Amino acid sequence: MNENRDKANKLFLIAGFFTGWFALITQLYLTIVNNQIPAIESIIRYFSYFTVQTNVMAVLCFTFLLLNFNQKEEAFYSKPKILAAIAVYISIVGIVYNLILRFTWQPKGLQLVVDELLHVFIPFLFLLYWLIFAPKKTLKWVNAFEWLMYPFAYLVLVLLSGSISGFYPYPFIDVNTIGYNKVILNSFYLLIVFLVLSLIFIWVGKLITNKKTPVTKVK
Image (tube, rainbow, N blue to C red; front, side):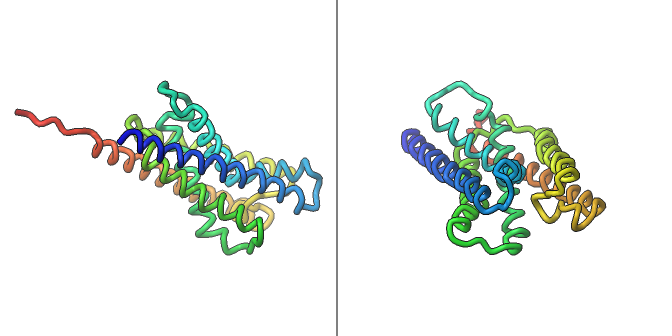
């Protein structure tokens, strides 16, 4: 049973490794060649997207878990709260894109393939991996508030850099178009979504852990 589980675990990691790096590298190439701006600026814009940053986290996690598959000691990337945090972030990527951003443009060809990998396949794959294989025993409710640090820092940095460059990666935080009041309100709503989803993930993690824990009968 454990051998079959290990094989399935490794297959998930291999799929995440190859599709993830393919999607990220290809998207970087497309960003550089399709933008009529200097390459260095294209690269900076590429890494300013929450989608890219979060997919990098997920793919690095897949990579380290695969390369150190037989390692028994817990490492940073294999800690329950780290895996759960990335699962929350990458789920937000899929949710926001498919509910809001998908209808704002029509990618074609290779861009369409990469787009689906980054916003659908990899988020779904990582979510499944977390549900099936990730340890969840030590998750705590306070983790939900700790996980807000990354999206909060991301929003602050994007707004600061945007005030200098004039570039905002997403329409719902585009100060040039909707103004600071609307952006701040949108950011607040987004952080609430992060918090609620984080609490749901912790609840699910505890539920799964409790189901796996054998009940000791008192005689």
